[in-house]
Length: 362
Ligand SMILES: [Zn+2]
Image (cartoon, rainbow, N blue to C red; front, side, top):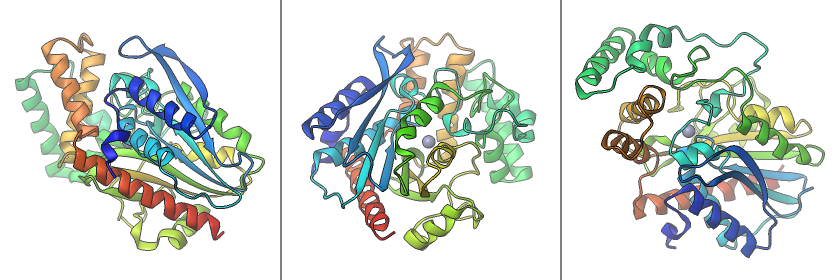
């Protein structure tokens, strides 16, 4: 297998690859048009294709690009699956959702066009939002107004001092667990369902009547060892999905509640849309999270820099400073190396095959 052939260097090229791979399987592609434009002025769409009967009782959902820039990875896994001839069990369908956040994919950002972290946006916006006092306390260091080498040294010193006092987990929670107060800040959950949130729910709705057993895979990058895909359960221990995850994956998956997951605790993730829309189904959902660069801190710093560029910088991605920041964030979410791509596709398809087999046993 030469997995590199499934990956593309831009959102526009990845979209074409997905559409071509679907067409080669004679699948119809449904496109949902985002109201904004891409980095090269191109049209932005979330593209959807279904392999197998759309009214199947068993449904596997595979999403790429929830966090825009992480879509290079997920797209490669999706395109590779469509290009291969993996068998599909009876009464089973795979729903491919390509580039759920096409703005972020095209502009190489984690966030949507309204600076929302989509995986924090699925909260009930009518209710009180989770507080994040650590973020409030550290705001000026996490999201500084100026960005120079000197200012960044001071900011990082302040953040490390916080970690030394409260623990590394507390710092991670402050920066990355999500916040609902600062629309210009990082890991912002928004005040209403954003376009990608509404689009995901609209895509899922036609499957609500027939789907009885659902496996959900949301493809991400940025945490963990290089090229390794951690199978993170999306379920809290009290969710019905937790028991299914335990049965299907046992200790091969990781869980928030027992501290085995490498992620920070997340509220408002895509899993909520699956659970709320596919109400006739038993659902097991995972975040398949691939490692990129060695240190989580560097990933977060890339996100902070990118946030500064659009919130306080001039957003000029062609000027030297902007270009350096875009190179930094791209590397944090998409290592463009053949060995990484090989590992990503092999593991991704292993997880998908196993999910299909588990679905078949229910
Ligand atoms: Zn992600």
